[in-house]
View 1 (cartoon, rainbow, N blue to C red):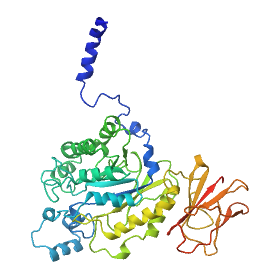
View 2 (cartoon, helix red, strand yellow; view 1 turned 120 degrees about the vertical axis):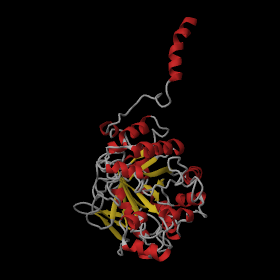
View 3 (cartoon, one colour; view 1 turned 45 degrees about the horizontal axis):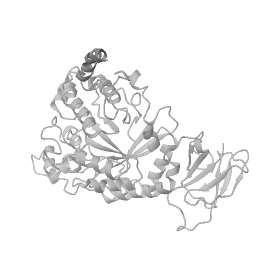
View 4 (tube, rainbow, N blue to C red; view 1 turned 135 degrees about the vertical axis):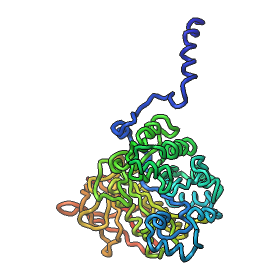
Length: 461
């Protein structure tokens, strides 16, 4: 017995002396071929709906776009140059906006409550946009971070704690790989990215820090700066993320890890902003879009017609989910830290709609037909394990009868219900296929919801 223990001592010492981070056997190699084989954590496909939040120094000028600095200083677009000339003293620099970025009314608990009311199942917050200002106290972003300047608070931490303590949403972070005017990035760029000073000294240390400190379950990369993925060492970082990081079993990633990776590699595809393929893809995808049609950041000059209506947003959600995607819907808080009331209203309206129709959205699968080929604005989802097909229709027929050209019903087996009403509805078979459903006679006050309704069809083919 004593001899056996003595023989085990060297092995125990080796285990104790192993460097941190190599105690778990590697599952994925730092190659796209290996990384792309990783299964997407199931929670993401089940969630279907998330909220994107763009907030940063650009929220102070809050004019035109979150690309304000670039359009003003680099492209020198007349409307941005004129805005500065008309509103700020000569010599005012973009960096001077940070003094005004006090976030005086930022209340993470209030934000979390609004997010919970939206019915979303995950949130993605901009930890750093292309301007380079980090919303946490990064020591790689000296004097250009939210702890040292502006809010003088760890905004990422406050929101993370509020979301995890007060909601059932998964917490995620957006991070821009490049920065428009960082001298090290510009130096690397001038070498055609043969040098890698910027990713080694800035990007990668911050990515590791974000994951270890805040443990996001979505890591939303963006801004490759026209540099290839090997410049960013994207595959090396992702191998660590999937094999060794504290979120290795639950984290999901997108496809923006280098100039040639978008829509080809990564956990799920975004392909482009406001992406909707209009057909089924073999790979999970996300439609990231914004309520403001023209900007991701808050704009003071926006008019009411610049915002998507709740009817348009419900249609985006339904259509996206019917084609197998997730919807990531963006809002832009103000520089003082409040969520504008029009964004709050849209979020709460979505939550109201999902309280009735969420059964047809969350944890659903695509069906053999994504939309009805006979009746317009009818979209399908399904739950095969429950033998259910959902027909979501966005216009209530004046006749009170809804013809569905795709489902085939069986007398004595098929049952049709209106979500939120739960009284079986009368239906009849049509030839050569389809069914006609008699909708209940309801006043506007008796309607289970507005902006779209769902029929739950059991035992149809």
